[in-house]
Image 1 (tube, rainbow over the protein chains, first blue to last red):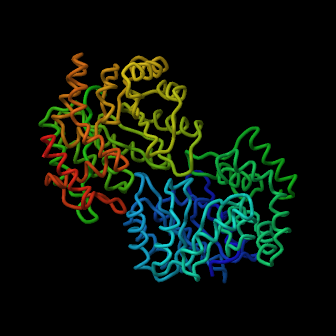
Image 2: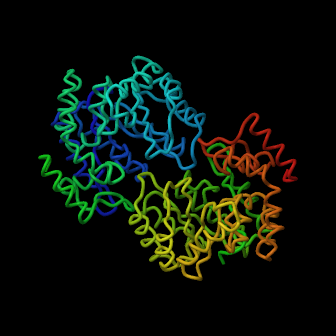
Image 3: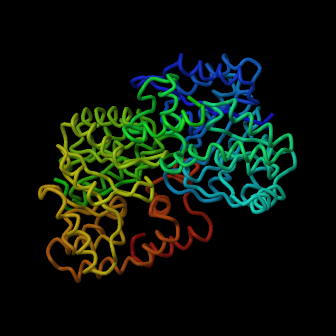
Length: 297
Length: 297
């Protein structure tokens, strides 16, 4: 199930509350586009800024709106107790899988991270995707640790961050990890700018931020790569370079994609939880121009 | 009020709940020792791992147990909405001051951090201490930003992390910051190993982890430095070098101090919220030996 394009929608807010209508509309767009799965309450879904009740509500809305498309629900939290409660909520809601990052405040040791995954996977009844995102968790997985966690029950996929830009180096990086994890565990990429490279290197999944807002665009890249047309996948990704440049400039994808949703009328402005702010002034105008240029507006 | 030794106790757990008796006992030891203030729900107090109700309970227990000693309550959270709610709780509890770090999941911009402090300080009725701790928040303050925030209403102190070890360089660093903040805003240090150096360099406060468990030891250093006996303050700090070495080895002070509390019978074992673990095996034995050697056991 954890293969192909997994699209991660925003959780748009209005004032301090979740904009449920806007969220449901985002999910319905993904279903209509035909994405392979929908990942809610990832970093793009602002899970870290929401309370348990809000997260349970988002999971429920997603499952209700997704039809037959599998929904992956993020269950990350700083404390193991909360992760276990969120896992129970996700399962009760009908999530097809869960996504877990080693979120940290105090820097975590390898033993602590392994202990977290062990505690959670033994109680799960759905597949789990390991979420490796050092830019937000500040925890760096060794491949050896990935191998040990991937061997735990119910682990079905690993969501890795960026890889080397050079195709041969990217392939080597993926193969090094692949050699350490069971064959049934899929490997997926999350850094959108690297997606074509990583899919071309043999990864089975793209856990995609732009897929949550521009599903057709992300699907075209995914399908070209999965059909073996590496050149076309790379061409379609390179075409989006002005967007990747904005992701780099604004410290990641979230503020850019959230601002794009506002510009497209898919979310109220501002749609991010304070203290986070969407782009203003010149940065906002530059994004609007890029969306126009790439025919995403 | 935010001068001298501010002692930060642990929030010890037993199983998944707060060990209220152990917490109250820690606070009572600080009162008996005569610390200048007590800082609860800082990083040492595991604020990031506790729910709002748990935090309100800890704040209340601290104020009830602290007698005339001022209590500083940590109100940090990822979301501005939650920080504002925690600030209200702290004020209602009788906190003398609040402590606020720019906790992050998505990396924060300077404008977002300024916006957070602005939103909070305008609604406060007690003094606020700015908590600068890049090791856990992953946000780095510029001195210029410190200056702008320190000029906001109700800002009374800045808690800075380590400084250069060399006394002249430490003094220069403190003076650079001092020149940018209003004279009534105190500057305090939080890295225990740097405390003597920074107090000798003219800082008014030590926000102390070891002060939460070994208040007499921390008071002796603070009093020597504040009385102008720089040499004695440095000597007393250098004597603790085996403890500072363990802090460096274990990625900070928390696991070491929490394990010390367990070894001293001041907390049950394990007393940290999972996934965090206190020290085991050889590391635990090494700490026990150091406590013995330093006559802290």
